[in-house]
Length: 239
Image (tube, rainbow, N blue to C red; front, side):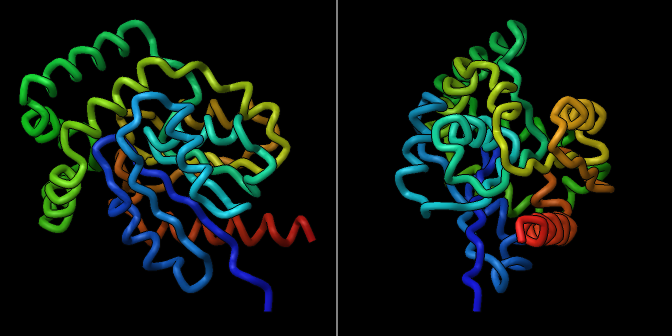
């Protein structure tokens, strides 16, 4: 019997590995899933290297939001280990000047003890319609916020500020690429994600319906189904 494929799942800002719980529950019988909590390292390439040192020899790699920034660094550092690459609600571009200033301000506020206040105020921008009011989502966000904390937040914001544009990493990668977007994502809009996919000839685009930015939390079954189908299709094509 063929061994299960490895699937590495990187979370977004203010997320721990728990953001993937619903997805992993649906995939665990078919894949060796590695949901990650990114360590508080304030440099994207160092963070990517740290994870590469701890992961299996080869794997499919999925990066969600901030996790996509880290995944792109890993792709650039050791592309030969990555059997297929998934970008979910993220961007290979570096930050604009305006976005960098916003991150610097967020770091300053977190250092001043306002981390929890900041995160609590973002709910309306992250979810599809009233999904953010669901008790199970409120509980999971609260738990992740407590486990993640200001220390991780500050490090990851600083890492995001300094990251370079990584579009070339996608263009030079020879393996399959899947780009996923939430239908109503206000952070990384679906139309922008589709434009990104159109610039990468060997990529495939999927929009997840009835989802804001928090795709893995809002639509875990849909995400799991799409990941499963795409990976198995890639395996069949490789023969």
